[in-house]
Amino acid sequence: MDSYRWELPLSSAELNSTGYTHGNAKPHLFNQNTGYSHCGRYWQVPNYTDEVEYTGIEKHFCKRCLKKYKKIQE
Ligand SMILES: [Zn+2]
Image 1 (cartoon, rainbow, N blue to C red):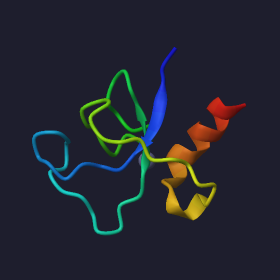
Image 2: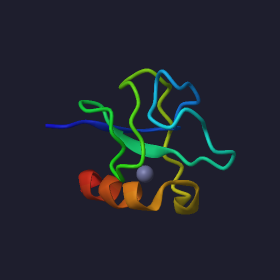
Image 3: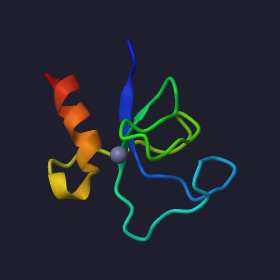
Image 4: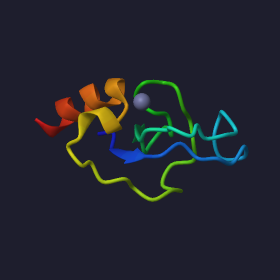
């Protein structure tokens, strides 16, 4: 069973696939086994950053990842 958690995309080039963090970066739901965000936009080292707590404010989170999140909450 895969586990997921919300994380902000990292700003270090060594630790993620983009090398930078957008100013308006939203948390994405990262698969802790593969390191990929559910939406496929990011990869980063699993369990490296702090987990971001889901606040319930949907617009503050990645829309595509949110769909997956809701599914695994059921
Ligand atoms: Zn996402």
